[in-house]
Length: 307
Image (cartoon, rainbow, N blue to C red; front, side, top):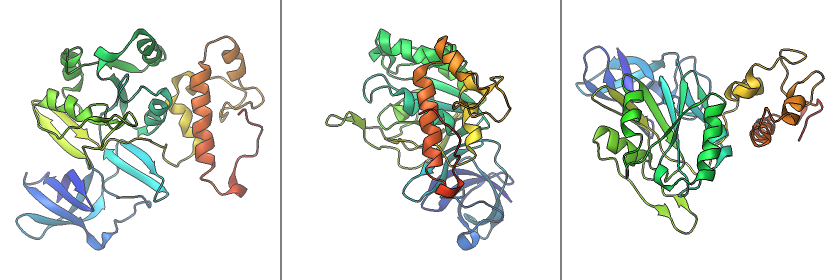
């Protein structure tokens, strides 16, 4: 049987059978999946799994089908990658202007956590955004990302967002407190638990503590737990520039250029001409450095780098 994972809590999964349409509680056979690279929680909401039912409501899973896309972060505590949503056709990353404050470098890292799907950047609580914040957010639109301002208070952008999501399976990710669950409640008419932002640290309190697949009226979303920080998953560092459109297709001296001061690199020229943002470039370098710090010292790239 084939199952679509709808909820994941402590290695116990709620899934819909794609064969008979029933809901099953599933576990992994022997707690290990076949032919899967080590990662924290090898099955994520949105995954398609293969197994068999052994009762009217319970099933065992032994295999996961190859993912078409994913939102994957680095689990620093376990020192391993963790996928929190899979097989989305659209990845929505939600930010807010003030509570919690807009952090472009957080947004850059979150974008780099997406693989295999389009990205939508949402400025929620847009009624709180001043001109400076809007200008900073609009820079992402200028380099090719789809952006949208929305507010559950004023209604700005809600119908446009509903239209964008229609027909898609969209994962929602963002910092705790940006209002993901409130936004999803507005869109779907659901009653996801919501919370306030901590006045002491101006950070959100966790209200969604596990990923959950929800659908209504042609819109399917995967709501994921809010985070205070996010780190890019550990992988080939050459992939990172795919998340930076301004760096992706630079015609440098050689195809594998990482844009860190190598011979023939075009980045310095573009920085001097203002064609690439210094802030975005610094964000890119920080991501590369963070990834390299996870590699044993003897395997690190020793080439000249710009810091």
